[in-house]
View 1 (cartoon, rainbow over the protein chains, first blue to last red):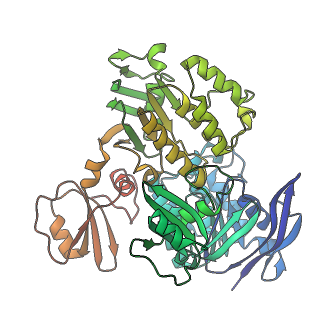
View 2 (view 1 turned 135 degrees about the horizontal axis):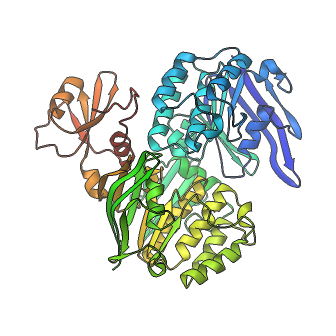
Length: 293
Length: 293
């Protein structure tokens, strides 16, 4: 079992702290969702992990070995990102061949099926691809290369609903045929909520959440009822947001309910990962709809 | 009440038919979802409607008057799209001023609130904006200009989950303060499903669906149970897709159920707009997961 470890990673661009002492452990065979607002540092972190840019401090290790300039370890990871590694004039076929020789093998059987399903023209030049097909081509590489760690930064950028659904189902199929580690960074949180096993939230360069999805969702509570009763019930709890609908109030709690006695007028349920993410990371904004407490 | 009419619009690029005899009527005060796969012709249609490109055949009218080179009518529409109309060196402030003088007025009060909520720096140059803030700036123009028809092509491109939710809630607020027509083209179908009143689906340049969302959803039926019973019950109905989960079968029907008697073993429910869209527009693909019938 391989383990990918990120220790004390710090990165500044000029005077801006992009990442501050990030510590994470990625275990083999899990599917991680790496969530964060625009500018939270997700892409920088993924680029540091794969040696595309260097950290100011800290280190990245696979099985206790530093990955810096370490081809054997770097060859265990593939990062699919918005940054294009290939020249515009290269044919897709050639890029596949080159990647195959760098990584040592390539799952041509799976690639052929994906190429047909997505309707990708493999004789095209890389620079001629639309945003959607650019993503699709890089996703095919990511799924077919023999890596233990597949890092996907905004994998469904430019894909229509049909292609997104096809990708999610192929990802699950590929994972079940060959369990390995996926790290998926995306803004479409609800679409991956059923796929990921663990959720990591980066906020302004710091890890503010890192837990199994199941445990996270079990701690979400929406408390709905008359305002007075709801506020009384949630007093002292970790209320991360609220909504008012006429005279009805919803307080959103993240954490324990302390075995309190629920008044008859108040209803409890869970809320979803995207809503949790929004409330946890909303501290900047003055929106009346999502005040933090 | 103003009405925007699209009659017999046809457009070819080279030998490719991008739009084929498109006929649509947009009534004032409705919110339309314009859905379609990548390449279905949505952006071309919106550009033709606003005179940015010209149709091969057909015409676009507002209140029975052709909009071609008609500034009075063109001034009733604003199209927010990926194509940038502004030079990179222009300051956002200046673009607002210019737009105000072209359209005659501008809702500065709303703009100021949106600028604060989204954290937009209005002294920046247009070309310096990230993808997300480029969208946000154009959305602010779209909501604050005094137009009767607001056309939004991929409005939430590059926005994180927080900014998407903020935009949807501001859109609803703006519509309720000042009811006018919105036409929203997006790949994030489930996110707009509760906002739009009517859904239009373009497929390979043709309108294949144009109805109130409520009516559309009422005609979706997922029929779940043992394969034999499900197939027997749905025989002769408009089955647009299916799923198999072990020995259990789900057939997805769009249309009437003909008052058939439902066997005890079979369960009926509705399915959502995104799923309907995927099945209706999936004819190209060989995916085992979404075969059309």
